[in-house]
Picture 1 (cartoon, chains in turn green, purple, red, yellow):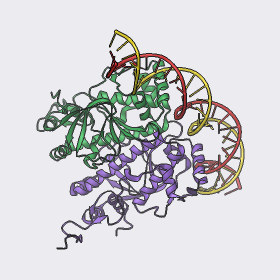
Picture 2 (spheres, protein in one colour):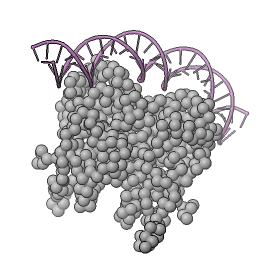
Picture 3 (tube, chains in turn green, yellow, red, brown):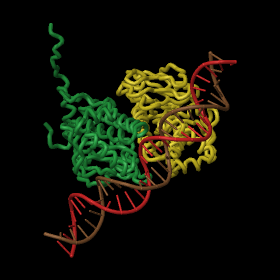
Picture 4 (cartoon, helix red, strand yellow):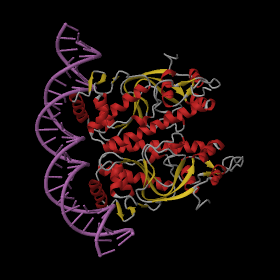
Length: 260
Length: 260
DNA sequence: CGATCTGTTGACTGTTATCAACTCCGGTGG
DNA sequence: CCACCGGAGTTGATAACAGTCAACAGATCG
């Protein structure tokens, strides 16, 4: 219903986390935003910057990148519908560089909008909090991934996670996803060297788990990839995609239970 | 002023994050809590458990532990004043096992208390949110640590972090801290094998950076350890410890500026 | 005072990093 | 149109780091 507008992806993401009424979602229509296109490896925010707006990712990927060692470390990857810097609402200070992986499109939304949104709807306030908690759960999972898996399963797990998160906002439904990031980006996210990332991807190809040519990755054997990665999507807390939007409060829906 | 009560450590922790008035802190005095002693490697919460209370850590260390590979992975370590499962207020579901490292003392506090606290004081609500954001920032740093440092600097960095967090709640002021955890615990947190953890600690001892005998660790050369670990405590967002508690609203204090 | 957990050591193996060279591709300017 | 350029991907050789196995020492606790 809101296709084409900046808030559409955000609505998808929020309803993937919690029940929202269409009244709640209508509040998003008032979202003031400036659309910005950002090129590969370009930064939207740098370490120690202070900001008074958030970046709602509409298309592509954003990452938090921290310079350390040879190639630095990517500590988080965000997909469309995410607000990577939502926490700056409360701590306006950036702890790393917010960098695009490949080219991306974002909507710049003033903090004030989210503050008013929270004030006007308790459900939306809760939904934003759930986005932060989802980031925390994902970050825990990255800790697990980097701490206890070898390169092959690490890369496989990351690909599974990104695929699942894309699907939550209606992308990659055919197990085919945009992959504008470089092998070095992938290496920086998995804590391995670029050379080893290359060999790892070759191994995944050799096992006929995925194809990755150009800027598109296709997962050939999803169950096989999930098995290799020991991937359990429970931590993402994404709900099944049917019937996510509830009717406005006041209306009731027959549950089919109270028949008599 | 509130020494001996369960909320004292929580008050220390919250005021390390943000300004709170003594009125705000007085609300904590009404905290209903049951004190529980938990033994080494005992679990307070298991994966997939649902809960309606939080564990406020008073003494010792708690960790989130996930079974994976040989020894599993510790994804987080908490120090006194922390509420490791604060997020269960919004997602009552545990994603890992909440396990004591060494013996610990916790206060079990019903979710309802924190909900009422949030409703009664916006500042306290914000302070609790900042605790969650601090957990997120720490988790990001663990990702950086595991992804881009070798065993020696990884272990050094973790020890620096724990020391700094302890100091924020008035512990380890003399750079001497309780270390009831085993070398295998440390290994599980740093994503290395127990044998290698042992050799790493020996190397830290050999370099005269720390001593660790029995259940006490003493940092011999703090600047040296910080340098080795490339440790920058900024991400912890701990404020300087002087004059943290503001007078109640309504009162004013001479700032020494408006002399007229 | 024996059982068990933790810490320590040595030898060996395996994974991943590093270095350096080369290819391939897309873009750009002559 | 083609030559050139730079970034990305690929390959092989070697080195560094960390894992595994196995044995033993020391501590702790019933």
